[in-house]
Image 1 (cartoon, rainbow, N blue to C red):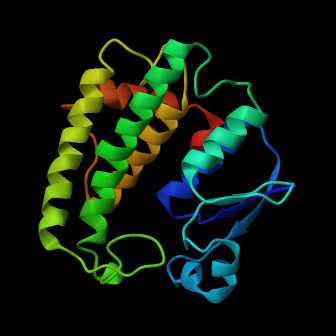
Image 2: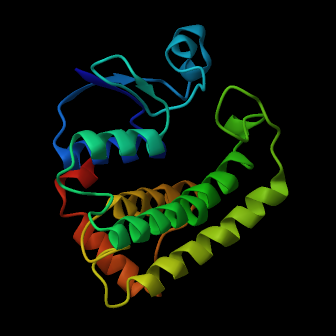
Length: 210
């Protein structure tokens, strides 16, 4: 049985949960308590030395320690529905937009949160190494989040999906980023009608409640 090492309150493992649901993959789940630092403990280090979630253990024992690897594995093993594209053009377009959702969305939010939250003092980056907070990065992150919402709104004018003309992993990453922005007190507003329309449609997918 595939096992997902998860944390119900964190954005990165939510991406993996949604992907598994969209693929219809039956799996076990092990919750990792990030709030209390379980990911840094020796027991979890033995599972994933990177001290991050999600991690996915395949039924033949391979450990996949990031969303990129998890997505590549699940798409190859469970090719339908094709969430990374089918044609060369689709694959390229989805890869590009998924990267932008990560870099311009998730990373901007994380930059703002991890460099400002008192609970993350000396934990400005995830993983096994402690890094100090840089307040100026938090300020820049908030500006980037605003630009991210504008980017999505412009992209979704006259479109139903982020990348191609059907649902893809880029939509998963974008939904998680938009929802995660609440932790830095940002959310789409009336100035983002196309983004709000798209998010409402995404909410109709059962996977998005995970």
